[in-house]
Length: 126
Image (cartoon, rainbow, N blue to C red):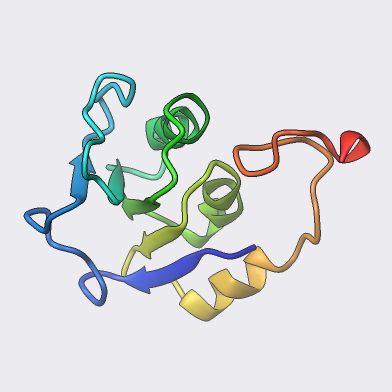
């Protein structure tokens, strides 16, 4: 799976940067304006709070957002496969997480039977 991994603040875009939207995990992604937005940063305030997964799927499938989705906050390598499958393009890992181990985990599975935000059709229908 292709997912850009980094630690903060290595590649972190500024919230004031043109085209970047910081979306809190309690915001409704169906109600925000996406005019001129190229990157949306979705927050995981703690690893047990998965609302950003739902926001990513809504942005991809219901809003048709084609830009970059970045997972931020308390992001662990254990979450990377689900992060990639729900439509994120990058993940800002927590400082104690090993990027190389995360890359190996992303390549562990070659495919999935179920559909996801990237490939909506299940394997039998592809």
